[in-house]
Image 1 (cartoon, rainbow, N blue to C red):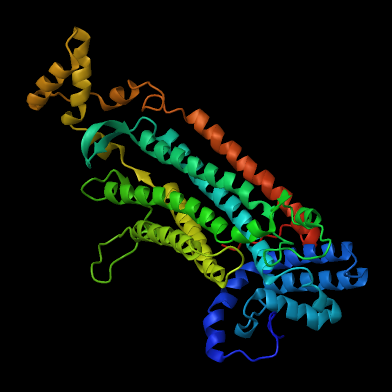
Image 2 (image 1 turned 180 degrees about the vertical axis):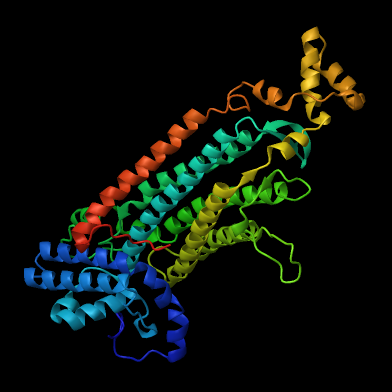
Length: 457
């Protein structure tokens, strides 16, 4: 099929290679989304009399055939197609004749791409929210199991005050919950349909944008057609920013685990099946997965910056620069999902060595506790602090479990508030499930298939 924009000249081959790039390869991820959006658009065209019922039926059948091919990895997108959108229209034209030539009526490739991306992004956001929520839940379970296992707390990497494995794990659980909740809230922004905005300025046809939005399970239309275009790249950046916060947290957690599983510490052991060997040293069990979590979190940050810097100085309306936001979006999202999943595996198999942790609770850990103990005698904090600091060799070992149980303020080692944390995570996961069910119903109505998922990551 000719390119969607083809007129009366042949494109220079170097120009074609330069402008297409690897977009046609990336678009395999968007085939299902585009088929659903195209079905909704075709129904909208039928609603206003552009398509006959028989033409609509033929197009829907053709789109369902593409979905079936895609699910079997048999739908081909060639470089000459430029992207999945041309490939899909070409397939429909070959299958349905004139009906295939009509399906692009009233839309630009711009709002077509936008709509497919929006469907994909909102589903990915909910999927990642759920994955992150499940990791948070796993950490809370880990915290409950090891709630009163003592652990040296550290500042500046040095031994500081009594802490616990429960506090350490629950800290990351709460942090990930907050980031998952932030991502979940973003789905409200993503859940608006740009279809019908065309190339930023709408078209002189009575398109029922609310109807097509509802067909795809969107809660609403993205109203202003120019803003619908101008949000391209911006919404991708918002999603990648949420990914960035999650991977930032997991990078720190990975560093903790690398540190605490060193033989010199031996607080934890990683699951052996998640460690790798050395080509020269037969004894090695390396934390390569954790090291790659650190490095790949940087790539997620770079993807977010790349998108924002691409759109930063663009004039309003469509610009081809938007094409170059797709690769960092998909790459950053794929990397984030991989990081969350591998860290979930790490937590599931993490072994705690309570004896090594207790042995690490050496006398200096209790210096501050000794200061606070002596305040009961009426002394001032600063005087006692100075005296203890000058006589650290006299600080005696304390019962490590008793000291962490004695901290009863909200959120401390003796009062972690795990019940409330678990309830929050459970409600978040239920919200993700409810949203997914609503979208499943819309997808089934458009595709005739139960359980169709648009995101393969």
